Image (tube, rainbow, N blue to C red; front, side, top):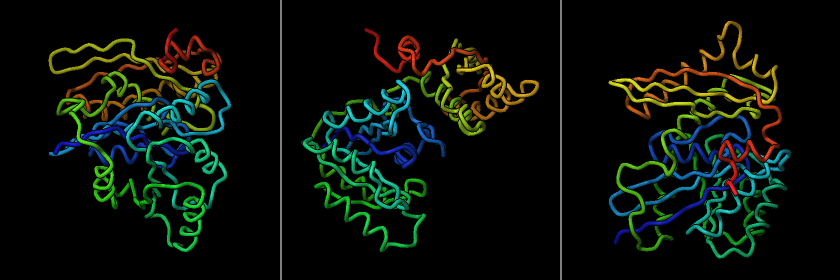
Length: 296
């Protein structure tokens, strides 16, 4: 019997949703950083084995939004839970009970989709009594179908979790052909890899104000030429992105190129530009232009 289905991964920012997805697929498809709101779009990673296909939906962290972009991100994450076969609600093992997690669980009340509680970063704790107390509070607040402790970073218990996920899936078709790892095009993943390096190398308000899009992508013999634009909200941020003598832009481009070459299995020439679009995160036109909202 071949099983297939859709699994949504939800939770607050920085719980390891994207790290889990990369670990399961054994390939980098989702960007990760230690900064909140790293994932901005809902997108899928496709897991295949001999008898199943699981489409994992990676979602933005659910948080108290301060911009229209933030509102979109949280609503996009929650909108997935009713249309999938299973929901993975992920929390950090090292946190005490968080009021905001309880609020997320309130929003799950009433849905018919089964929900697993996933306790991630189990490798970071030694006080299991404290963890058990926190988990009991969550279990008393919501009727989870299962509770699992994992380390997405190290891969601990991931295989066991996959077996339990398959038990909840029905017999079904192969939605994507073999070899497909994401429902997003290569261009989207390339943009994300560039943005990941900006998150890694810059600080304070700059990472949250950044958007990346591709101006052009040309395949030539043994070489892919990519021109990408980094959008920020203020001139001061543009100065930080470019760096002294263009040093930061070169650093970002060099690091991103390594990931892009692994994705495309091709040599890459990457050229980056930076421009300012003031307050783009609160302007409907730019949210639609940069793909965060459907056009009317």
